[in-house]
Length: 219
Image (tube, rainbow, N blue to C red; front, side, top):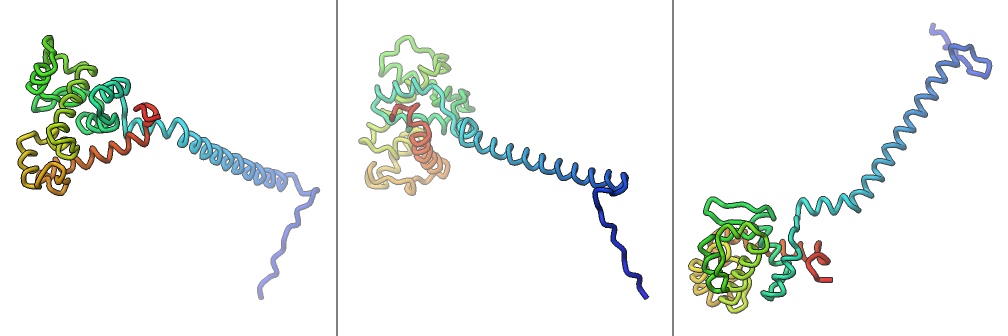
């Protein structure tokens, strides 16, 4: 036959040893509450950071922007969308000046031969290839070339951006096959790399306009 279990009833007069056990339990509960409050505070602080400086810092990492004063200046001079300039720079160098395996230099990845032709057209008689390391010169020459390409295609931006990547000779052939510059779409570009390049530039143009409206002079 089973025995009926007995239960201890805790009262204010409980033995000291039992009181210490209850104290430990209450201390554990208080400690857990403090931890929970700290976690909630950390989460709240994280949200504030995310929607404040943290979000801006993340944008600067994923969508960097530098030399916006030069971009605005050259956009005015060359009658270009500043977000388009920023998007081309992002696509070419992600705003990190470098020299490619083909010898293209700086933020907008300009070949010295192209830069020399631009210097000759624009009257830059003192130009030397090392000048392409200077952001002012590089962006000035890159936007000059971009404006030239857009004009070459009668104001059509798609073939101009394609030519910035694949060259005039290739794109001129695609334009003829498409029936004209205004008829050329990204689906008409046979080079996967160039097609992805053009699509990425247009997407980043929208992103720069949306995220850096003030810095690029839209408002």
